[in-house]
Length: 500
Image (cartoon, rainbow, N blue to C red; front, side, top):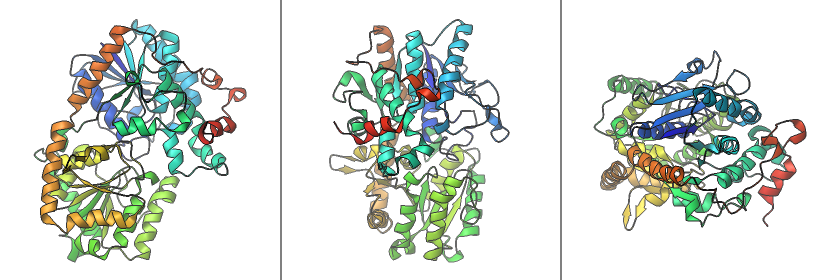
């Protein structure tokens, strides 16, 4: 089969450039790369379609074609969408309709063959899948990764602040694109059952998809690359990473505390990741402070506690507030924040801190899945995870606990989860061993790819009509993104606030 992956925002290259350094370069890109790579290794032709970027600040994405080197039948294809320079995903909407989709169609017409099916990712990829299917009949699957309605919930959107928040996030386009994507797709792929039944059931998506229809959904768990994150793996830069960590600990941590374990966090610097809540939990618990230091692996930022961050949103909403807690509670010498160069170095960091009896934390306000804790667990770290995550349903099976679940809105509960593991060596060892074995057995990218292929082959072979009971009409803006066709705040308000 020939399979296209539609992922317009962020970008892809063989170095995994900028992963976790920008909100558009998060776990979704890792997911797409790993699934695409695993499917290609099964012998299928795979194209990752993304946006062409010609920007001196983002030089890695200037070529039209790229690849990973691991397989010849996987291409990264970059096609223009709007201005040449990098644009964050919230600003791409009109250019996807005007440029990117037409450029995809032209590219494959010139090649003489279209993919048999598209897998689409996030709301922007989903919308493009809808538009391509309309013109070619090529079916598509939709993997949302996260949905806009939950993001609006976490931002506490009200009728009073809707205009201000929408000005940055453009939820008016995202929500309607998601409704179309889940409605027109041949299949909606979620990481967990919780994602299917709790996220897709939000009233903003009423009438778009029936969450009780098993023909419309497949739960396919993502995987962990054991060759990178396994505790026995050795990165090419393993020792260099250990040296880097020790240099940063000498820079940031008081000498008397340098042999303590770490409370480790590694995520995009996004307010929803709730790193501030983790810091407040640490600041308010004397025992936790006695037992460990906080270590934040901050993608692309080597000394954010001392140097102002260039990205205004990151500085204002994430790093600035953390710095304020450190100052107010006098936590200097107890916290370190730095970057590592790539995924192998991140995995090496996990192994380094596992050897010190550390814990990995993910305290997001909401997390559709939560791959980072599974990667940390594969490397040998016990994990403390937000209860508002997709993997929470996997961390307790029967009477078996594989990690510590905490309430991200309760800093005392975050501290409790960390404290219980740090203060009980037997519990540390039990959770570390259980979760590591569990992850390595059940969460592999090969199994993710095989599940994708099973469902994709069925869709392509049946070539049936869309199973949705009723197809939603495509908004005029998504056909011709001119001012007179714009999606109004009133439309967004209707879908988000009205519960009929």
